[in-house]
Length: 296
Image (tube, rainbow, N blue to C red; front, side):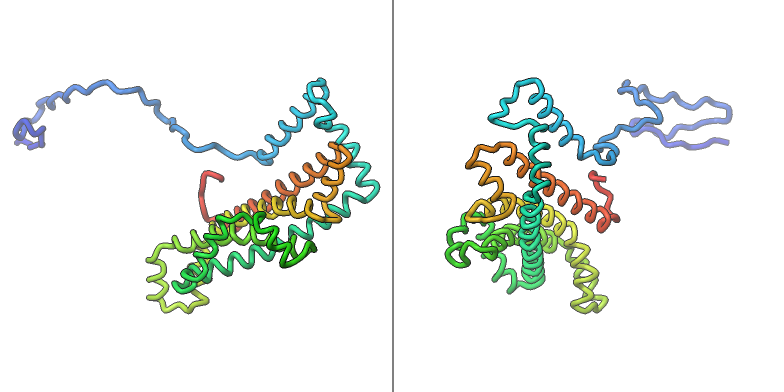
């Protein structure tokens, strides 16, 4: 009794009898040794709790060391000890809190109006061809024109009051929100649209079940950029004919060469910017918990 086994293309079928040894395997070229049970890691690795604070802490430590060793001239840049003492004095007099609250109010209002208007414009342009033709062109032109370049015109229209300051901040935020939300909205797979049409979903159901999940990652990218834009715009508008705010406090300190007060203002801006970005990241991780990305 014999069994037929396939062989290489160069030969025919091999006939094996009972008890016969199988043919020897062809020699193989030696390759790199592969360790069993190990796998090469290509991702960034596990995240550490509060790991993003490592960079700022190291920066402050380097600043402190340079100041303590005498390499840093206090007339050019005050040391951390002097800045902390100045901040304590400003807090004791209530000067810092008053300016911080006014700055937060301006940034918050500009961020709110910018986010709402940017999202509304993105939805209107992304779900309608006529809306896209009417909205996308002007917004792309506005993106090429910095909001700060429109300051002379906005001052002419709105004066130098709070309306102008909030409008400048809102314009920068709205463009960031529109660009990113519109990009993700229009990149939704058309098969989902066809499926929604096949299921006879209403317009509201289509927006809630297809548009919102598809454009949510772009919304958060735009929100992070919008938060940054709000602080950048705030720094500028508070140094233009302002009578209050962190920027006004820094501008007055510049006139009297008080570098420690200027650094207190910069630290306040940095803390608010870092904290607001961290808050947006936390909300994004919770809202998009269904995604598995390199960010973790």
